[in-house]
Image (cartoon, rainbow, N blue to C red; front, side, top):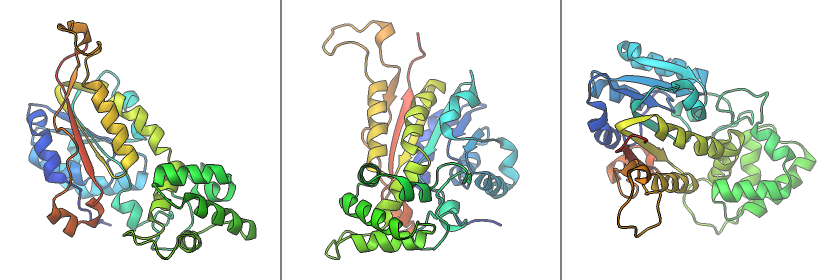
Length: 313
């Protein structure tokens, strides 16, 4: 089966990567391979490029390999979470690293894991499909009021986090949650009808549960420094985020990497203490209005790009 997929901000990413990936024998890590949309576009744009693709979802890897067709021999695949990047690469240096955070189209549209609030399905939300580990059903059925409120507020930016948490606890006492459909009903009923924010009322809560189940924030904290360490001089890293907390984390780590390791105002910065990285894009790039109209999943996307300017001393 071939899955429809429109990679977000693809042209902007390729443009930002061009100076790094145009060199002979360039290597790029697609740390969140998904259906391979960005990888396919990069392999087509840069004929000498090889891609190391990482994804925790075996079904995504299979679909991406099929979608690449005759380009597939230039893809080296690893089934893993991207926080294992340093283990996968070892001492190898690469010219590019791309992280497209969040869900792939395959996970949203195709498999009954409970990611979508528009289709009733078993309440898993596991990106790797391993329901022997923590699932969304485990979270909503066992977490305390305080824990539920925290993840809904921090990971979902949900202003009604405490109301929703209280409703979930009351409903699970009547009957444990097993499907996404009933969860959507309870969340929607807990949000006041006067709330006029755009989007589905369960969208923020589903995002929060998914991030908790898959330990996405913790993985990102590990993956970004590891990716920066593996960049060759003039190599670039691009991160696409769809959540304000994730974007804030990327911004902070990038800013720290681009700062000299001395107090501000020193007239001379010793070579050992100079920043090894520089921002390629100051601030976050956003999708064009045209892309947001044709690809609704791009609406909240924010792209940040950084480059290595010096080797470690």
